[in-house]
Length: 393
Image 1 (spheres, rainbow, N blue to C red):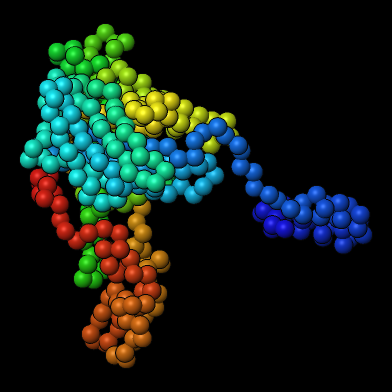
Image 2 (cartoon, one colour):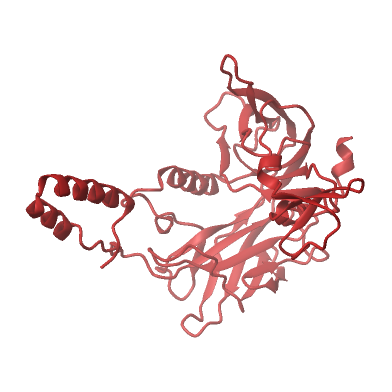
């Protein structure tokens, strides 16, 4: 028998007390019988247990392009990476050129920037040959034309008051917006990705006190201008940063990449976006219901998840170095300081279970912590300053 969940346990204890007072033994036994076992329900679906998942984008920039291959997991299993390695992956264009990709680690295949860079107007296809015991098939994407993309006009931010109560300090967040337009009126479907980097500092005199963290966007940011009078986007809400993070404490940077989509790809991202807004119910949409542009040559009826994309890219970076009221900090004294040690005695487990935050020679006092992250910023980030960091000076 499985244990009660927290709600049933609370009701159970109340009922026990009540029964002890009123001697309602029969009622107690009925409740115990009805809630004796809780079993997990996993619905039966007609979705294949393992499907090929393709994630890939090629651009017109002289950089490494990445294709990620993996296998989907059955409903009810733990959500974890399931990369597909050992595949032969290549990209072809409409001129008959073929460009092989190399597998740099399990499930991740990359182009060589010395021999491949996308060209606007060319059409590209992805080719995959799997090599597993249960699946030795060939997959191919529909040809995708690389569309031109206009430059980003501006990326900017505005302070937003999150809460302001009389007698309580104001709390502020940061809303980041984007403006863009296409004077050629050729780009109707936009998508944006971004990479954020921020500096944080530990407020104690420790060796590793200044670090940087970088994250890539996971949200879907798209916009359709085909229904607008002008091919123009103003004040697109790209990202909101709350005060429950230290991103804005010292200095923050956001690099935004802008892509031009075909209508088919836009509809794909739009369906994914709608699905992500609906996740949580038993009968919500699942990714297998969203068709991509990759198919199996030997078995065209086999479902393949994901999309192979080709787009020109434009980018713009913004730095934010400003004061925001009520910004969260995780390095307060009441969180970090564990003890104060007087004298010069040897500290057991020093630099393994105990770390020194502050030292005073006369008189000899050492303030210590048992939380490594309070004494070493590399627990969260890196001490290597990004190459672009001084651009914001």
